[in-house]
Figure 1: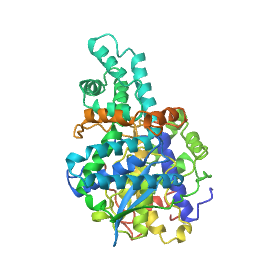
Figure 2: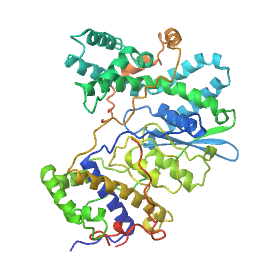
Figure 3: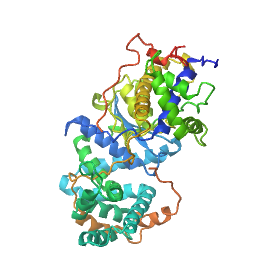
Figure 4: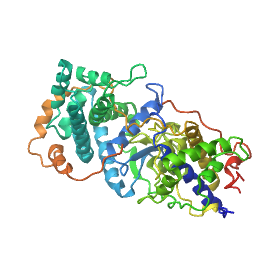
Length: 505
């Protein structure tokens, strides 16, 4: 008989990563991007967009290390922008930039609207320069996307194809701010509309090479967003000017939060054992699920791949920035600005962050999410384990998350392994609602891009060869029942056993 997992905290963590790693192997993408809908013009909508965009402007590298999150505290004497990121070594660089941005915004919104354009241009230039490594990588992705289209002869043959080929050549040789500006200027052009149309599904059928057109549109949209984000920040800051008035706000960093150590598989880490722990005790569906799961294992090597995830080099769980911000506000009992529990994020959140926020008793504003699962996601470490004051709350949150994760696994077993279609973590970010005088921008760019040793154009030349790794590349569901809804603070019975659904978590 297998040795039971006796420590409640270790049992909770082991069970959680069984769910996470099993789902990772079955398919990283769990659905389409969620659409968080707020009433247009409301304080919640304005605050959420402002904090998301401020976070985005700080996320200066591709990948997850500089993923930023911000929450605003409404303190007794001032407002505090609390900043966190996935990699604590990047925090001070990002803090300095956020202070610089808030100072610039204060200057911009203190002037009449017809006098703001020059200052906004300078802020755009500053932000592009700060994120030049990201822009350089996005430029490489655009070049690769155009090359793939060309290799498939998508720019030859017909007049419309030739027109698209001529259009894409406009982006050759552009770098830094000039490239971002051109992408922004072309985001709603006739050629972009043609690219969009060719990438759209029609009556459930994808046109030939639709994915290549979607990738082209996406890569241009990401470059254009460097302009859009600043424009939106200025627009939203004008509505929330109290956050930027002289002497009324400050920026503070949240000390990096340690996560749990990498979990280890044990003799209980078997497909049958994992499945039993996802189902209620004596569930009549167990045999049917077992048969399907074993069939999938024979075809896909599920257990081998799950165990490989445990042993993957670099597997060290990390507390994502948005979780750090939410937990900081809760443990310090801080009041959110406007009493709206909003955490801004530089990119759509992962599936686990999305579920964590849904399950959290503070009821924060729902996160936008790409609904992709990242196995290195980790909860905050409780140094005293099950004796920690926060254990009961964390257990309730994680048990609720496991219900959702387990449902995803069971649904996929029913479908015999069919996972949702892959998509990029980021959205394209193209919207016709953001207007700007790009002709004025182009003329003024010429004044400060010549011979400036700190200019983004020259900086990107260095960044192109810096070796930065690129990212690998839905309506939200209803909240699940609380973990302790049946018996006070206790977890649901179906998660209390390592073997048959029974030894409490």
